[in-house]
Image 1: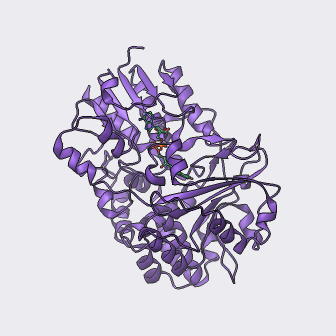
Image 2: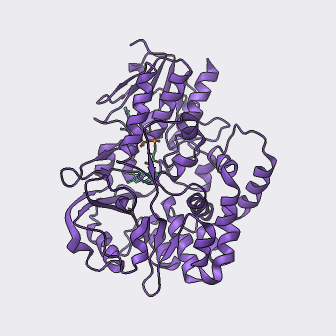
Image 3: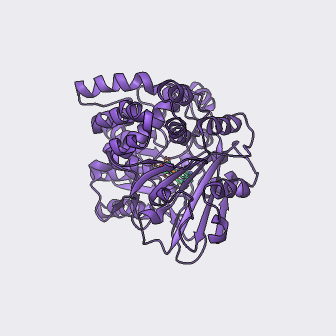
Length: 466
Ligand SMILES: Cc1cc2nc3c(=O)[nH]c(=O)nc-3n(C[C@H](O)[C@H](O)[C@H](O)COP(=O)(O)OP(=O)(O)OC[C@H]3O[C@@H](n4cnc5c(N)ncnc54)[C@H](O)[C@@H]3O)c2cc1C
């Protein structure tokens, strides 16, 4: 095929870029290194035959809120909502539950009810225009004055470290723990600026659009995007890893790759090369998948209906665990993020569970016992339910997807500096100095998660460039 545009990598950003370009009439060739499309959207039988596991992403809050995905109006993808978006069990008291309804969530927070409504609740009331501002930090925007005003108010709290936000605004163990569990999705030290805002935004999304998953597995979403690309005349190929840009001959190239790969692939001007080399990795993750013979036996039955479960206890414990990881050490009692798809989707061949904890980048330490011990802490008897387990440390994650450098699942550290320089400081950071070459991975704004916004922005720039 004589392509007008080659897209390298089929993560959500690459797929959105490919479909956006094809819808604008470009002849698109999509090249994927792995033997399946999807990147972070892949699903596979990781444990037993017939058990569908999401290798990476399951929770699709960002996809549902994303202007890019909403504009694609994909057919054949069903989102399934668990009865409870997220749960945060605690040792000596009932679990905190995050419901779709902000008031219902606030009721469970006692003295912190008003604080919840004034932060996460207020951000949710900002609605999709506010989310759009956050997902398109560098525009383009329609001038929506109320959304800008709400963003300014939200921005003041959002820039705070999670530890400061939790201690200043929340007074209960429950409220503070909940903020910590949400903010720890950043895979960052909770004393870092912006971690509070990220946590609040995730919580607000639970109220605004929910934290659903894709019925049948995240692969269904990737496959729908590939089908859409092919229906528009595009070509998509697996098992093709691009190592040098010189291999490609198309006027437009969109790269869903890490900055490290871009450095290895291309002869870049020295100044840009220097700036890219300064891009910092995040810690890694150690991820586990289980096939179970029934639901997880949570001590608090309220946790059973939650799609996502934050394990690790109080603000102090979670902040310590994240600080240890950021300092290059393995936490003996790590924060564990668990997802139980069966709470929303009965089509995955039985009860499956996944969970990860954060580890220093490139770690080769087996965290199986530490993760399972944290689950047992809130669900005694969990190990007795395990039929089969599968573990992936940083090396296995990177072998499956070269963008997960050293197990970094956020495409680079989620610091304030790298919020502004992602991967370089520029009004259009998706553009590279090479004519017609664009970067669209999670290492570009707005960063990690399944929202496809990097791909959408890169494709729009490519179309504008002619
Ligand atoms: C364990 C885990 C759990 C997660 N959970 C969630 C979640 O629940 N919700 C959420 O929103 N996000 C989640 N994420 C994050 C989310 O998956 C990523 O932020 C998102 O997938 C990034 O999309 P991307 O398009 O930038 O890149 P990726 O999804 O990483 O895809 C990049 C693709 O490009 C291919 N590629 C790379 N280099 C080349 C090359 N040289 N040639 C050809 N192909 C190449 C790779 O093989 C891969 O398929 C999770 C991530 C992980 C790892």
